[in-house]
Image 1 (cartoon, rainbow, N blue to C red):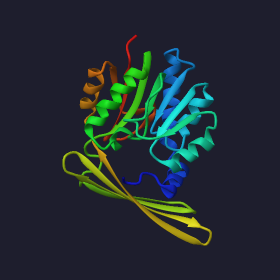
Image 2: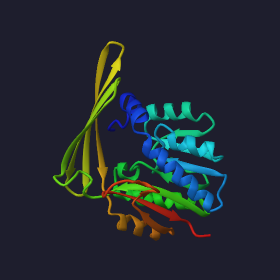
Image 3: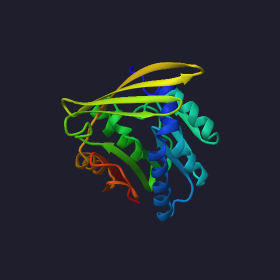
Length: 239
């Protein structure tokens, strides 16, 4: 199986790319409060290093998180010791009952088969209490940029990361991520290759409605806009 967020990339993502989770956390907590959901279990699907879980925990929620990356989960457990974290695929790990669920950071795009998305949405719908909500974001066609290829880099005093993204056929995207991390006086190099399946927001909204959700589409998490090729979907299970 392709490695997703090994030790080097987990560290870099945790230290340098937690802003999306922070914005999403503020949005989700505000949304739940407006709906009168001030407590109860929240599922953090694809929880990563636990930034979102930490904010939910501080807001008084019982957090249950799942991720495929062991190094990410180690960071999440250290950050939020009072939460429950399990390792596995969101398409297969049993989901406990909950008042809300999140899938932040293009989590559904990493599922290996398109049929897995429908499976996850159906399972989350079953786990949610009536009136509960699912908040997620998804990468859409065009994510690789106008030319179909793009390269971005970020430099820190203790690490450097370079991501090369290219669009593939049949609505797929491949991202090759090269990381350099400082280890004492030496630098270590690692590389991961991630594949995402891209989804039209309207298609995903139809799938959500098909399993019983009421759906609203957004361009971001409150004032945090995610760009042209990432959409936020808010799905509510009717009472």
